[in-house]
Image (cartoon, rainbow, N blue to C red; front, side):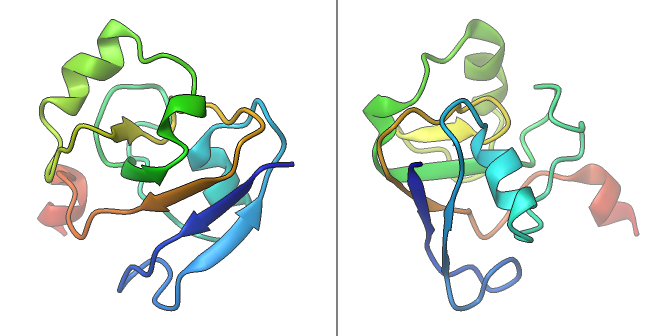
Length: 112
């Protein structure tokens, strides 16, 4: 099973973390299954950017991005060339290193 190394994030995993998940799992599902509560306001339906991650290592092993994901990523805070929506990025057999950006665009959370 591929390993996902998560770089430290002040809210979701201050010490950083390393988790494993079966190939075919999305990064978002893998994080949530391992108690890293990444935002996913649209319930992983590719309708928002709250689960945006930056893939620091292993980007090329992920599935191809579709047009919907590409369009949404244009709205993500802190967009980089190796950004993905974690709900759409499907693990292969290669290990990954991901960074959860410090901010996301989550209007529901901001209103509370």
